[in-house]
Length: 205
Image (cartoon, rainbow, N blue to C red; front, side):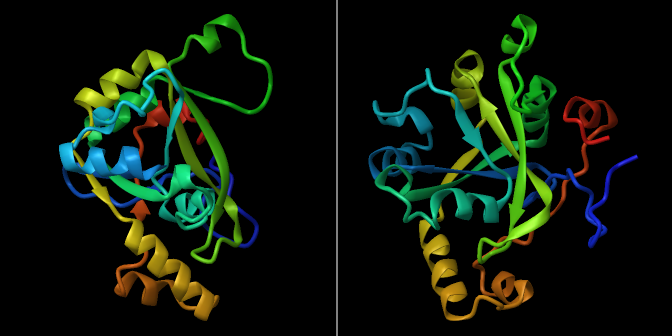
């Protein structure tokens, strides 16, 4: 049975995301030199500064991306927030190859997995900690080129939205979520239904 938090009916581990019938949106933060070229050419590796050999982490949660990047102000390497669309099929292909990382040492077979998953505390728009978890998905060198060149449908720079959210919660840290959604500063994320076999892989049950 899915573990639920004590003060919420939200399951402890659950994927929430912006998606439509064809695609799901995930987020990453990059330097200007990588992001500008990526949007212009619709390819993450358009800039030679993008390194395929590094583990790259994608996040379906907008608020967690805001926390990780400080609304894009944390440092120059995270100064641009990109919204990246993938088809559901390819997103689930990623998840099917994942190993959930819990901080313990890995066996050789576990290290061979090309995708890593971490479940970290979800955040509010003002970056407060919530009692349930948000998924972060790490793509290793073994799969990075396929993901970059074949599995990305579109790339959009949404940095201005991040900065707008920062200003909104600075003015009123208790501003209701529905107000931020209506203003276009927070995506209207919904529960992303995961097939049963992937729920087992992701330790959601």
